[in-house]
Image (cartoon, rainbow, N blue to C red; front, side, top):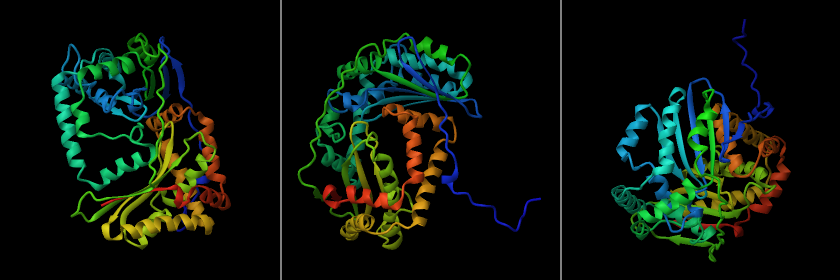
Length: 426
């Protein structure tokens, strides 16, 4: 009989052994790699086709994102409505997303419907025609959205800090202007589509309760495409950071909020300090119990939320602090952000605080591996960054074993105000 009057033992998350389930890896006849996880309790599937077709590869602004969005809006045999109807008929969901380096087509469906949906996806990859009417609607909608967003200090800050870090001509620093949408044309979209989708570089990630013949189905519809046949030319983009490290922008003279971004360049995941700095970042501003949140939200009441994070770019990265605060306390907020850097460089990190951070990070990892879609998502992040499971296990060991002295040395190395770009938009 359980002891009802005695609380159960609370086990620290860092005591758990974490294992990352390995995917099944194979190649289609055309060399397209497939990573699959057979797991789960419900008969559902997630498939992602990842193309090297993001704005890193575009010939002019917005071509990558527009091509990715309109790939679903018409083929030579189906219009946008018919495509959506055919997907909805099977209770499926087809989405597309475009990022800096990659463009993604993702499908969520019931296991038993997979064979009926793959031909539809194949048609999008081979026969998208980008109807002029759909392009005009897209341009109008995006210009209206941009006009609304330009009134928001938070939106302006997100664009400007990237430009300060990487330069406006770099894919990580560029942003859209009204005339960029006016300059979009079908021929440019079709050229990007032909180069980076039909004849592009693709990797497939899938997870869930997979049918026994899923490999044959994938090979039937995508193994005969001219994917991964030509060597993709990697464009070179020079980083040109801003000369001035501090910038103040007046965007809304009647507004009461200030958008604050403070950031510095930082190496990508291949740098040996990256896993350690992830722990330091969490302690500094990476979760709700962080020092930035405790000081600036809980103690001072300057903001509803403040976070810091390492940007997940493939070629270069940055360490970012982001918040919105009252305009009258913006300067004080910036001061406290730097003050918390100083405390980490010169102060003491208590064992109880560090244990809380470690438990949070390990607990987050455990949650991220709870289900097939989460597991394949972890593998996708590793594969696209050119890493393997040893990086994952090294990160886990780092979280469990890093100590306060090592974190203080990292703070002295990376948390120096002179290294940061500072932007306030009011």
